Length: 94
Ligand code: FES
Image (cartoon, rainbow, N blue to C red; front, side):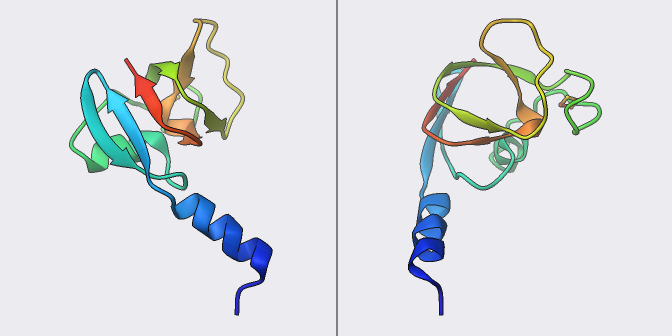
C-alpha cells in the first residue's frame, strides 16, 4: 500500500505533459529523459555521449522547466542538454 506522499508523488510524475518541438506537438511525461522521449516519438537529435559531457544533444528551451541531471556547462542562453534532463512542465523546444 502506497503512503499518501508517495502516491501523490507518483501521480505527479505520471502526469502527461505537452512537448512542442519545432511546431510538432507531442505527449511526454515527467519521468523519462527528454532525449529518449523525443526518440520514442520519432525525433532523433544528434548525440554522442548521452551523459551530459559532449554537448552534442543541446536543444533550445523556449518555455517550460526541466530537472537537470548533470551540471550544464553550456553558455548559450536557454540551451539544455536533452540527454541529461527530465521535463517538469509543458515544454516548447526549438
Ligand atoms: S549527448 Fe553528449 S551531452 Fe548529451
